[in-house]
Length: 120
Image (cartoon, rainbow, N blue to C red; front, side):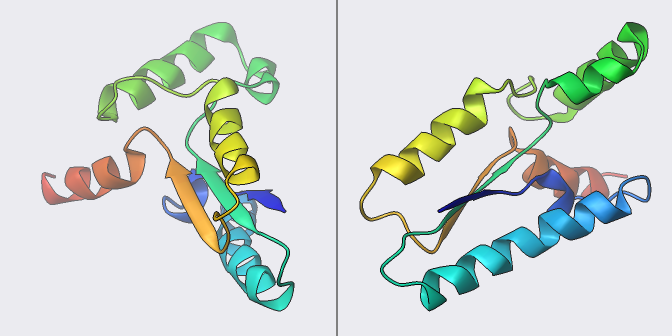
């Protein structure tokens, strides 16, 4: 079983409280399910900002500003695309030893967030 969480579990936003709560609940749900449902393997993937269709609902100029500003503060200097979390999911699905595990693939956003707090 693979659950997909998101960066809002580690980087809450006043604009996205419900989504942050859902993301925040995914990891304990997955880790608890791994113990409860043995031998079913449970793996959690938590991506950062990903270029996906829901972002296309806003204007292109605003969307590009969000993408550029986010990329500029990440250690990898880019945001994710759908193939990035897909690859992380495939690792969990294909590894017979991956269970009770969570992988964060946010381009270093969790680390960068802490660094920004230290330098402001």
